[in-house]
Image 1 (cartoon, helix red, strand yellow):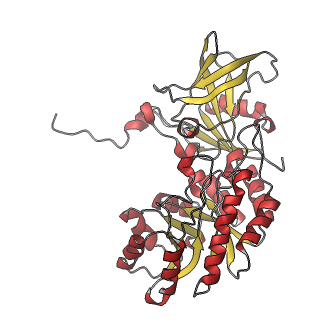
Image 2 (cartoon, helix red, strand yellow):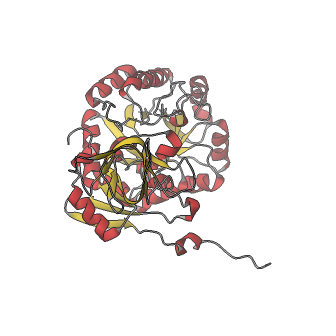
Image 3 (cartoon, rainbow, N blue to C red):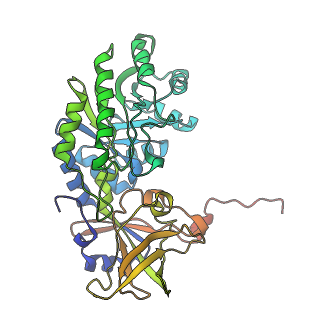
Length: 408
């Protein structure tokens, strides 16, 4: 288990015992696996400061675990800042990436001492000045280098994100005219970067290195973003971190600035799985349809990105017979409600439990109440310790914040 963790590495007996106690759909997150992934990254980048990208999984237990490992937290909203501080992370260990930030979010961040705010537009600079912000600033650079598992997450070349290199150098040259402290530069190529796309990330690093050497002020750090991918499919190749590290440092070139990484998916993806119960099985001439109690509202990645997740029947894992050409779908009234397409599933029957792998990143974090389904529960395991870290919502919870109007 030094490399990427697969579904076969989990204890099916333990997972079934969790289902017996907590029901389904159920997310399970392994905190010790998170520590192992963090240590592997830290070893490959011994001189870098690691800021976990909270958007991948904002569970308090995850943030707390990484905070105790020494990680900082990269946040993209006031909500993520709040969650991080609630987990015991000091503001000095927080990086707030302000992408078109709403006023309440910007107000929340400005009120925090020692926080670093990562900005990518002149309007955000103006809005910070209007708030008399005098703290730490990082400039987000649009290097034109975008990569990732889907066009929706290839942010590095999207005009929405960051200053051009020329704009960044102009801001740096006017440093003395600002009241705040510009301490770093940042760029992010995208999410789920594969080994075949690392050359794009190297181009990003080269641009950041060039900007740092041209900067009229000494920068405290260069933030090269995150986005390191993990192998979801059986044909996917895991990243060789030692090679990645060597290429990144070579691409950056000589610099006195510290290096910052923002991994999210790489740390939590294989530390989490989703457990779901088979409700129905429909046998057709050309394929089979297995209906489960999780769906696109529980795990949206297959519907939104066309993503692959390994799925196994853990109730009868040693049964040789199988269901070929199987579609696994949920209870949502849409054809997009897919968790697996054209997969081979072990022989199954209603009531069996399916495990869906690599669900620790962008699973629970993107879960919704679509079709008015209550959100699932989450259990954390840590060696022999087991604890419920998010209660299962009830039907009554769906209306918790609704008010009735009085004109009917």
